[in-house]
Amino acid sequence: MEDISKGLEPFRIPIEDTHHLGSFLLYITDSIFPDGTPVTTYEPESSSADGESDEDSTNETYTCSCVANHDDHPSVNICTVENGATCDCVSDFGNFYYMPSGNCDDHKDIDRQLLNLEALPERLPLVECSPICPCSGNCANRLTQRGVLISTTIRPSSSGVGLGLFYISTTHDDLPQGCFVSLYAGEYLTTDQARQRWSNQRVHEEGQGNHILSLKLPGKTWHIDPRFKGNIGRFLNHSCDPNCVIQIVRWGIDSLPRAAIFTKRGVRVGEELTFDYANASGSVDLAAQLDRQNVIEDGAGRTKCLCGSQKCRGWMPFDETL
Ligand SMILES: [Zn+2]
Ligand SMILES: [Zn+2]
Ligand SMILES: [Zn+2]
Image (cartoon, rainbow, N blue to C red; front, side, top):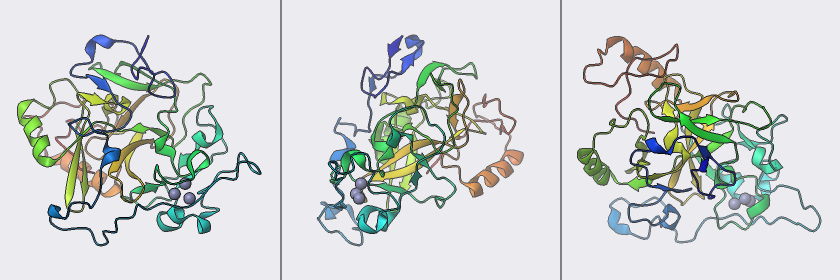
């Protein structure tokens, strides 16, 4: 079977059926702008023409100064909470990753890190070390920068419509809660650009998938469109009772925010991975609100939800904002 990532991810991601890829054109491991430039090239406050400028617009890039002493301790991880006092990134923004005692697939240690969802305050973006922090390889604060490290495959969705992303494993271990799945990569659109695309194309024409995810930040909203260019994140279907959530993560405080998919609960081998399109971050308040809405809405003009979960709200959400 073909590897959808064409060798760009650390492990092959087989796809069973390449005939139903719809508008998908290109696999990317990280998001890009519509002109093809990587979002890594984004420079935060070089333009004061953007209206309100951020509180402190220093031109220096924020980094820690942690370096691993490979000669003495080749396997010691740095930028952890334990040595947070010496790491500026961790002391200023925290590190919500931890090493499990069990398994998160069987790859090298630092890749088995999990996100402590319980300790992370709701809606707080994760701030990892920046790609230009000197810590690199042994840094314990870069979980989402290492590509897709769990075994997945793309095959027809359990709902019967379109394709879905499934967790497979050679070790037969379940994925624990807080396991990093992948980024939600796509083209970063401004609201104007997103509107233009919406008016050109019907959003739901290809079944449940290919969802534009909106990241609402103070003063600006970015829309991640994975329909034409994206990674495996675009194959996660909607569920009203999902096994994954999406967290905003920054690679350095002055980077553009990215969306990262983590398991919300344990995931069995062979299970399809899903998130809630109406409540991607898994907000408790929003979940309660959606449950209430479900009672009063009649679903006129909406797409039927096929998630099949016991908590199914009946209809696909229109849009959501993180
Ligand atoms: Zn550090
Ligand atoms: Zn750092
Ligand atoms: Zn670091």
